[in-house]
Image 1 (cartoon, rainbow, N blue to C red):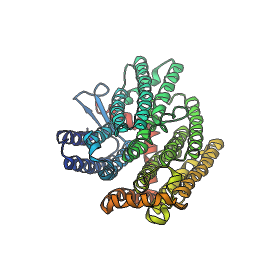
Image 2: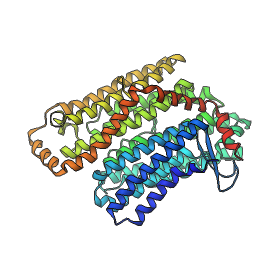
Image 3: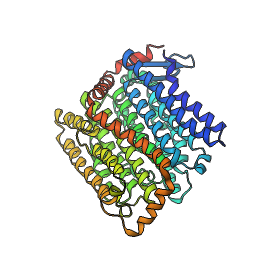
Image 4: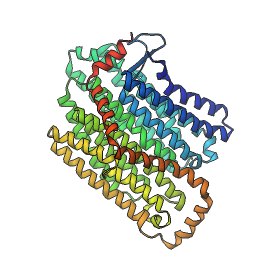
Length: 503
């Protein structure tokens, strides 16, 4: 029993409480935002090391034995997700020091950011389906307010669409939870993995698994359930867009990976074939939507959808290499996608717009920003030797090994179309000269920002770009870690024994 598993939940809860108690102090709000994230990162790194060396960690809270108590479980997949979440939380909190003004701070930005991480971390750690529903609701409440932070018309429109579709997702999820409990009498995921195989009506189990595909698919923004994301993720402050674009859909992907490697493994030929089709359409629809956009963050929002397809493809293959590729792809995409959102915010701060046709000339004025953009853009498109190359190579190799030639070809084609979108951003925002009437306005905004503000925005971007390069150049240990995580997923007995053995 490892009681330290509560730290990824307790630390942001403590930070949120302090920020609320000192809500009138901008200094305390900001300091709590950064220090809380540092403490969170330190705790999850330690827990990851424990999990890597000692095996899957589990704890039963409330002094109730599994499957009746509240179970927290940390395997290598959970560990990877917690570490990347803490990294993003820290870097976004630094970015927020300039991006989030005092007015937005007064509307509880920093407490809400910590509460959002409570929901995300709880989702990664929970060993119970109903508690997963609870953590989803924590995420939904905090993310809805963060999305509307600023009270602009476009934000409110996006927030309403976001909350309505996610409420539908929650209702579908709750219905699925009720069905599972009715069939098995348990909601503990380890116990479910044992008892779901005892259900005689396998057709009903398959039907219930489709409910979970719909519910988690909405949160992951898979085809055809993704329409809410491009309508909302480009509207909030950039720091919020970055944390949303990097993490929120990945929680849905994580949930799909968890239940379709641990619980719903009885009819893989049917369920995973559906996932392959979903992955293909998600990739294609997302990248085509991105190609049609001319606003920086809208292009990136559609690419969130497109990239989710690669992760679902790895899950659908249901092989060690496929799952390894999916896990590595999640980590890579969080880094690259979040960094591109942060870069879009710097471009907007310097020029006053997100519209590609009104940007222009950034390469000549700010060559360092162009380099940082190219690192993340090339990683997203899969250029060697950056992180995205190894992620896509793993998935392509996994597809070829099991003779899934069509979806593998789609993945390669979508990679080329991703490059097209990145080149479009480069051409309009960085390479083409800025129109004369915008130059004086740009210079004025640069003076208004000052060197200190620019440094706060650039530091997280440089850090993420460095991580992308490091993961690409020294990919072997990261790939090995993801391979071990995939092996754990394909050997659910380890998870089951770690949880039920605690009773």
